[in-house]
Amino acid sequence: MNDFLRPNNIKNKNEISVQALAHIGDAVYELMIRTLLCADGTTTAKELHKKTVKYVCAKSQALAIERILPFLNDDEIAVYKRGRNAYAGAVPKGATFGEYHAATGFEALFGYLYLNGENERLNELFVIISS
Image (cartoon, rainbow, N blue to C red; front, side, top):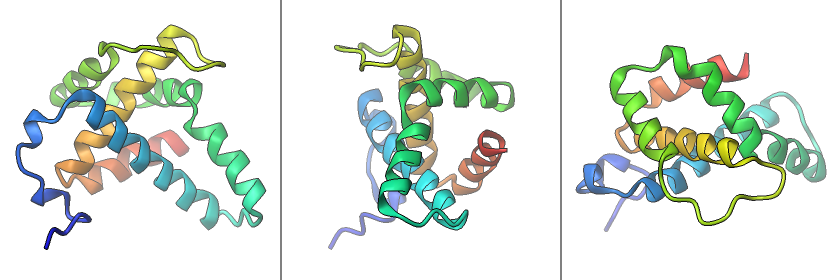
């Protein structure tokens, strides 16, 4: 039986596409945001959803990467740049081309850290973003 909540069981982590890293990273970041909002006392489902969307949109993620970029090591910067430079078919409304690419790089970084079991590092970066 697979234990999907233990990313260290994933084989060939270095061969995962940047789109897959971004897909996982988006979910990780959204879960962190949702947890923060619940801890802050946000109560109604409508309020939680509205605030979550505000934080996980491409524009906000582009701002988040700007905040943490000076704190990233060389490997993390390389993952971010791989994600940022990945092909994007369509840019969502409310975001520029540059914001969308920066957000994809941000998500790829969070996916990479999560899959490598670097939860402490994820928390360190999240504290910088949310402060």
